[in-house]
Length: 364
Image (cartoon, rainbow, N blue to C red; front, side):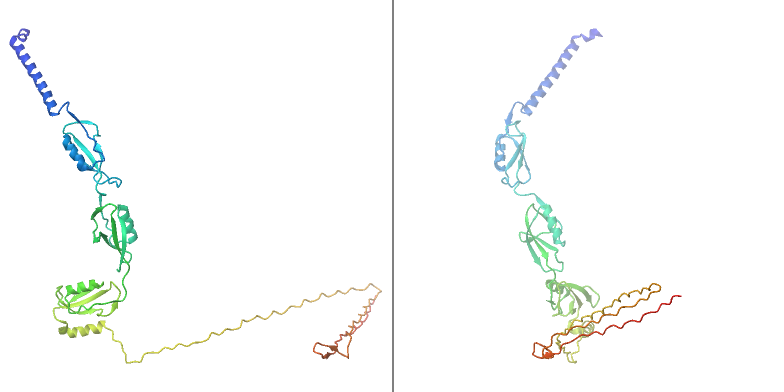
């Protein structure tokens, strides 16, 4: 077996196989160098702060591919200005390498308008501010939905919810100011149902019950009766009921009279009107009642206790001395007064107290 291995034919085939393998490896590396431009590198030019159009032109001249990506809008920089380059300027890359450009967009990224129609204006304004929309003018319009947001306007045109607008755009809003009062009801008798709907809506009312004589729902039927009647005044948003038929109102006179007896109140004007006269009465003031003073209570004087005399002695009460007040000095048997008349002097004389009888004490 060893002898067969050292045969010159075997050795020749082995050498040929090794040579073919080495040749294939060499050719593979040469092909890779040619395909990848090995040793041929191009420096990335400095295109930061240039406009995207100038940057693209420079990259085309240097043989580099490019990819433009928009960054977040920054108002400090110009629109379409190159803010960042990857790989960084000065790096050496091969020919055909893709260079990524971060460009400042023209304006803010668009956002969707939120659905705030018919919502309370305070909550609607808060929601619009959260998504980045600025409120410009607030227009008030008569509506039964008071303080509700009715429409959103952008550059004078109404926009629907979901419409994409640039962020931080200024929009105008229409808010309901409440219903209008005392609006005259239009006359729609003789019009078709379709025409009557348009007139009622334009007059800021709503269509209520629509009763067709034949039970159909044909919009071409003619209105022969309405309630409330034309010329009456109602508030905005009130409903107007309609009766329609394919016949003319003149042909339905009996039906109209029947409806009048139901929906039209007749006022009896034969009685004279009641007159009301105002009676002016002067207010009377009663004197305040002063309560009478309460009677004073007399306090009884304490009695002096009597003391019994000693045995074999009698006690006698001393007579009270008489008190006599001296009269004032009379002048002409009287007293002069301020008016020049004389007034007799008043004298007060008290009678002397009677002497109490002595009590006899019997000693047994």
